[in-house]
Structure formats: structure tokens, C-alpha cells
Amino acid sequence: DHRDLHSFPTRRSSDLVGEAGEVANKVKKLFGYSDQTVPPNLRADIVEELIDTLIYNMVLLDILNADIDAEVEKVVAKCVARWGREA
Image (cartoon, rainbow, N blue to C red):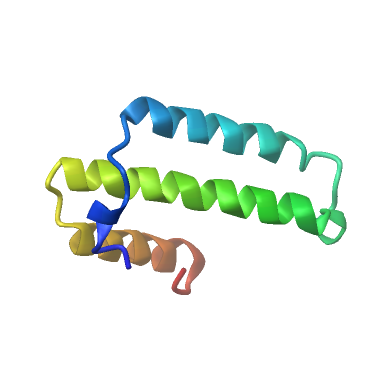
């Protein structure tokens, strides 16, 4: 549950940058594949890294005392506006 962020250890923003770098390195491996030929393990690795970056972002929002529920609603609204459906 995204509201129970205190179960995660506090992370520094540099950890988020490191995770973003890991995502970028894995995404580079996508070049050369069509959507249908991306190996399932690469797809799963990228999804896992993206989830890690989401966790770090949530922790940073918590550290900043942001209203996490409100921020998540904003993200969903942006997704709906961009792609016409909920994330």
C-alpha cells in the first residue's frame, strides 16, 4: 500500500538517480527489438526497475511531507489525459 511508506528504509535522492540509471541501461537494450520480440525476461527486468524508481519517488514525497494520495491522483489524471485511460 503506497500509504505505508514507513515500512521502506529512508533513501537518499542519489539512490533514485542510481535506479534511474539502471532503468536507462536496461531500456537501451530494447533498441533493435520490435514490441513483439522483446524477451520476457528483459521486459520483466525493466518493469522491476521502474517499480523501484516509483518506490524511491514515494519515499522522497514522504520525506517532503507531500500529500501522497493527492500526488498519486495527479499522476493518474495525467495518464488519463495523455493516453485516454487510467494507468
